[in-house]
Amino acid sequence: KAGVTQTPRYLIKTRGQQVTLSCSPISGHRSVSWYQQTPGQGLQFLFEYFSETQRNKGNFPGRFSGRQFSNSRSEMNVSTLELGDSALYLCASSSTGSVETQYFGPGTRLLVL
Amino acid sequence: AQSVAQPEDQVNVAEGNPLTVKCTYSVSGNPYLFWYVQYPNRGLQFLLKYITGDNLVKGSYGFEAEFNKSQTSFHLKKPSALVSDSALYFCAVRGLGGTSYGKLTFGQGTILTVHP
Image (cartoon, rainbow over all chains, first blue to last red):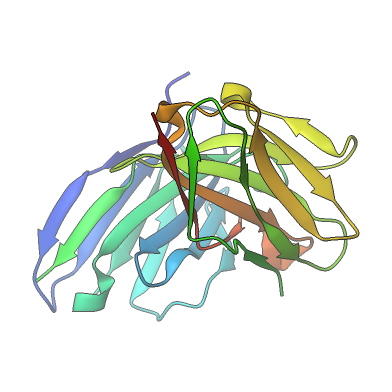
C-alpha cells in the first residue's frame, strides 16, 4: 500500500496570505489528523476528520481550518498567515481514529516571510 | 488532560551499547502509548505501541519498550545501538473518549546520538 502523501512538500508565503495543504491517507483509512511541528512548541494537534466530519479540534485559532472529502483526502487551510505559522505540518491517517496506529506523511514545510 | 514528558533532551550512547530513551505519561484511565522516530526532513515513523497485554512491547528495528503502570513510564530500549539509530524520538499518548479522537499528545522529543 502507498503511504500517506502530502502536497506540496515546501511552501513559501508572505504574511497575510492564505495557504491550502493537502493530505491523501493510506487507502482504506478514514481518519485524518493534522499536526503542527515547531522547534518551540513541538508537535501539536490541530484537528481530526472522519467520514467528512471534524470530530476533534486542538487549541488553534479559527484561522486554521480543514475539511475532508468523500474519498478521505483532507485539506487544511490557514488564512491571514502570520510569521509564527512557519512550521512543518504533518498529517496522519488511521482506520478509525481510535487506538490504531497513526501513520504519518512526510509533511509540508511552510515558511512565512 | 493527558500529557507526556521526555526528561532528556539528548541521549548519547556508543555503538553496540544498550540505549534507553525515557518517557513518563499522565492520562485518565488506561493509557495507549506510542513511540515514533523522526529523521531529518522526514515525517514520523511508527516504532511500537502499547494498548494492553504484556508490559514488554517489541517493535520495529530491534526496539522494545517497557510499560510500567505504577511508575507511569514507557521507556524505549534497544540492546545494541547502531549509528543509524541516531534520530529524534517521540513518545505519545492517546486518552479515552470523544475528546481524544485522532489525537496523540506528544512529548517534546529526545535527540538520540549514537557514536561510532
